[in-house]
Image 1: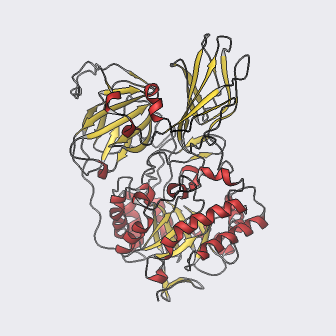
Image 2: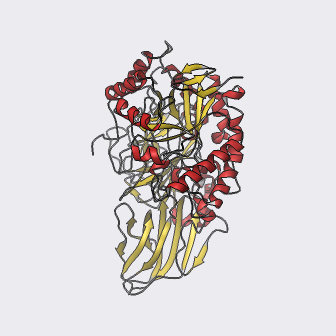
Image 3: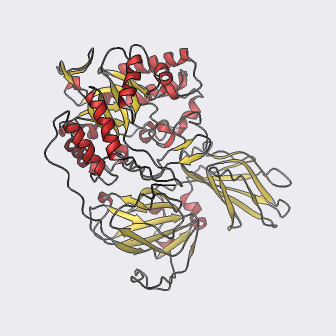
Length: 608
């Protein structure tokens, strides 16, 4: 029977020393038709292992649901890893961070108790159910059963989580170990923490294998880990070779040469490694997380991460630099991945539109609307992501709107006329109101749940009372909206032509002025196009402000003129040769009804 063990100084695969040279590749950030391609390119860079997180909320959108099909088919992903001759490391959380919505913790956990990431019986019961669904898929693919899985992680960077007494940390981690072993996991378990004394001393257990996370000063960081792991192999579970991007900030890059030197030091010292990330992928749909270390910053749709393999699967300068380092320490295939051809370039006219206000009834989640004296949170509505519409009445005497807090952004209108924006990032909590009576609406957007730190698990929507100059506003109606599948809910007859001064379906010729009239939001816009089926595209939305994008009914994610991202990646499997549908929900306004597909990605400026 094959074995994988923790030796005195090395990992032992079938009794022989084995240096893990791994790369992170999250199946949930990559279209499943592209899994095999990305895994193969990992092998061509010289990796012998693929690591993946498992996002609990990706599989369990509701407490009584669990999905392991299609894009959620972890078993198929691990089988493809094995088919490429690689090993696997699985990190099921229950918390993963990963710049993912809520750090992977389902938002509905707030209803099972306040003890998230603690030894709370209701939280542990929910984890037991999660593991009972998920871990048998991993167990049957362990190396001890002829599969690829070498190790499984327990929790994630737990030493960085505040507010938990040390004795409770130990009880919680040991409960997770028991729950993991109960599902047939017999390969080694491990923890990972940032490479400093405080985190490594608080985040693990004496009986569990410890690993560290860092992205530079490898020898120094390994020495810190050795103080906390006196025997056993040394491993960097997250070797940070890039970084994530936040809306309104610069695109992060790191120098390939510096990353290569640090990797060389790590491997030369005999350490094992997992590159975080090997391939970042995309926060498709509404899956991006957010950070809040004093300022709320949601993560961009692109999760390129400046990784060795780019968001669209192209080898980068960093790919080649790290491949050369790996070749000094381990066998590397002679084959090198080819550079992709330029993507198709074409213009699209979005010649049909419909105001969001006209289709609220169509997009409202059935039976989920609520009336209440105080505005309910989105969590009260069981709206775990996306948008909710709040309505109440105001008078000319109200004069000003003051909201205790909006999580995370609200478009405010009076009888459909725009009033302004409330915004968590800029801490804009008040707006002047027109001096007239009418229906006040707040279209509230959850821009991504916090994935790190003490604010994990906080509710979304309107939080706290809403006041005016003379009173507290009461008598609210709150309507959660189902926008993930909006295009399929919008029947053909709701769309109306856009009068852009040009024939429907055409676009301005190069060099000619665009005579299209500007478009007001919030509104949906639709166009069709033909192109090269099955190949990647890059969507550019110059002149548009902020909203959501669908291609052939698939929600790609958010776009925003605040950057840094200048294009959105459209995976090739979503594109057909003819009859493609592009739909935008523009929240503010656009210069005209035109979009472009361009030849290459634009991830934005690298300096703020």
